[in-house]
Image (cartoon, rainbow, N blue to C red; front, side, top):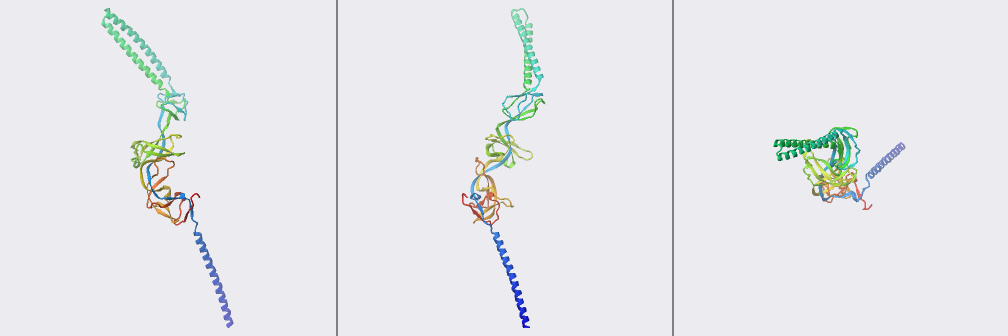
Length: 381
């Protein structure tokens, strides 16, 4: 009996020892897994270059009004048909350079030539009548002085001479009218420039005032910008601007040349015309945009690219003791540090809610989680 109890006790102890080993093994594996998880959470610090860290500082900011629109030639004109007829001799095409007064083509108008010749012949006939009337007047005046005829005959000669002179003047006016009609059949360039459009082809019949060609002068270009009502009151003639044009890397200096006194009925926008300082390589119709400098303010500023807006409240990524912290900020006026004209100006914005001297990550770094470790590479690396 005692032997049976002894065997049972041994079995119980063996089972208990096996269970303990299983539990201990599981706890060891759990502890190891937890340690591995914690180790996985520890990431190496993000390596940044000195250019990735900005310092908030006070700076004078040039406040500007943003403008955009098409580039147009200040001088442009259409060559129109001043007489109806078939277009002949039109050789110029788009891109050709023309001079003011240059003959570009003609409108076939044979009737004008015939009328001119008719008027010239009538004027010659009237001139002959004047000569005859003048001789009669001179002869009659001499006879009156000698007492051979009465003064009534002289008065009749005077009337005949006056009538002949009037007819001659009328004939000369008819010649001028016919000459003007013939000149109107000649197509001449009203300004110097380049042909932008050929709207009528040779051989086509053109009506009076039909557009034949468009000529633009690319030596003087300007931006035609539509400005909102609130911004338009800040614009004044003579203010400087800096524009960028699609396809041209170098900014172009400009100034406000004119401001339309009327606002558009629907949008209340105002058209401002900015004269470009350099039109080299530009074409009419290109799109340009830029900023007109209207004022300046001194405040704490940051590049607008450093301000993140992927949350309801704008914020910046602040660097404190080697770790990232998100700091909400209030944005103010936008502008550039230099309104005069260095290439590629950086757009800045005034910020409130952050102290001067605070280190902020540049926008090129990208979003980092709060608490992320950051290390700075040595200069030159």
